[in-house]
View: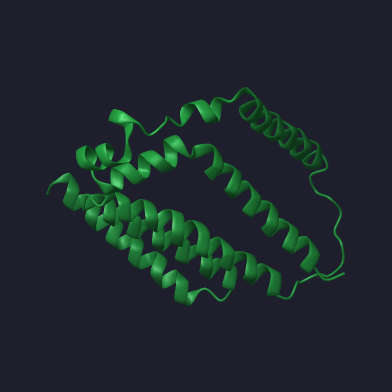
Length: 176
């Protein structure tokens, strides 16, 4: 038995077990987490087949975006077991979150004001043109290079804004 066959069988058993968890868990959050695990195992199957782009899209779109949105909706609409405010179990957590938030703002400000993100996105001229990259490497590679090299900073800023919008919607939508 080769390593590829062994990893396929391990992934198959894990996929079936997590898929059974989706339909057997009574808690909707546990079921959604099991579905995320199933989608991640499916992405590993795609990696075994050599379909890197499909695996990355599987993780980013389905496991990353849609299921996280679904988890937010489930936790927002689920009736809370205790409506009373509990005491803060980790009192230092707010201080750590504040410090990490300041570090994030500082790092993004540094990148914005030093022009590092602008310099990393090369001009599309000559050998760096999109047509040349597509001709030499293919469409998928050109898309990946453009997204993660030329537009990495706008991509990260957009994801940060989406997370802030989701958190803001959760705070505004909470029951008093």
